[in-house]
Image (cartoon, rainbow, N blue to C red; front, side, top):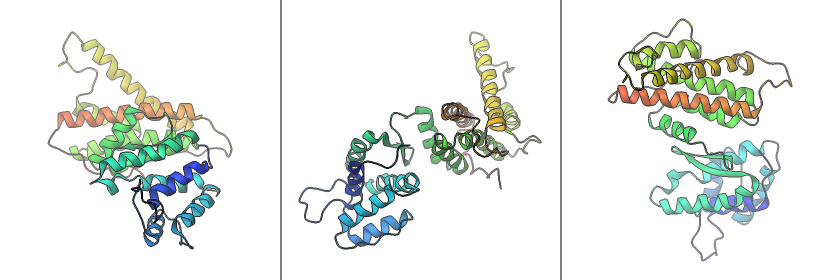
Length: 297
C-alpha cells in the first residue's frame, strides 16, 4: 500500500476526528470533539496524543508525524477505520454516509478507500471490493464467528504485504468454519485435522457428498461436478498453504507466493467458507453456530 498519505488525506482524517474548527459555523462532517475527547479517541487507537495549543493543528501535526513514521500503514489504518466507525452514527446514518464520502474523495487519490464490511470499516485498496469477502465478513460477525473473522482480517491485511501469511490465513478461514460446524454437531474432530480432513468430516452431515442420490436428475451431474470442484478447490487451498504459506517456516527473504496468488487463495477460501455457512443455515435454521475454538489453542 502506498504510504505516506497525501496532505489532503491527512486533512480529511483530521476533519472527521475533530469535527472542524471551534469557530466554524458550518455543521461538522464528522463528530465535533473537544481537545480531551480527541485525546481519548487517539488513545483508543493506541496513539499517545496531547493537545498542545489549538486542538485541530495539534491533531494535524500528530497525524503528519504518524504518516511519516515507520508503521504508518498499521497506525493510520486503525485511526481511519475508527474515525468512520458506524456505531458512532447509529442515530445519524446520513452523517455516516457523508463521513465516508469525505474520506474517500481524498483517499482514492492515494489508492485507498474506506469500505463497510459487515459491522466494521476497513481501509482497503481502491477498487478491491469483492462481494464474497464482504458477505463473509458481515455474516461471520452476525453469527459471532470470531475465529473466522480473525482469519479473514489477517488474510485481507496480509495479501499485499505478506502473501505467504495471507495464504495461511485463507486456509485457516475454511478450517475455522468446519471446526465450528463439527462442534455444534457434537462430532469429534477428525484424526487428520488439516483443511481436507475437516471438510471431509462435514460433507456428510451437510449433505455435500457428490454421490448423494436426492438431487433432481436434470441437474444431478452438474451439482456433482460443482461439489467435486469444491473439494478440489479446498484441497488446493490446503496444498498451497503447505507449500507456499508460512505455517511451516520459510527461508528469510524468499517469497514463494506473490500477491496475485494470495488474493486468489483468499477469494477461493472465502467462497468455500461462505457456502458452508449458508448450507449450515439452510439445513439447521434454528441452530446458530457457536464461537469457533482457535485451532492454535
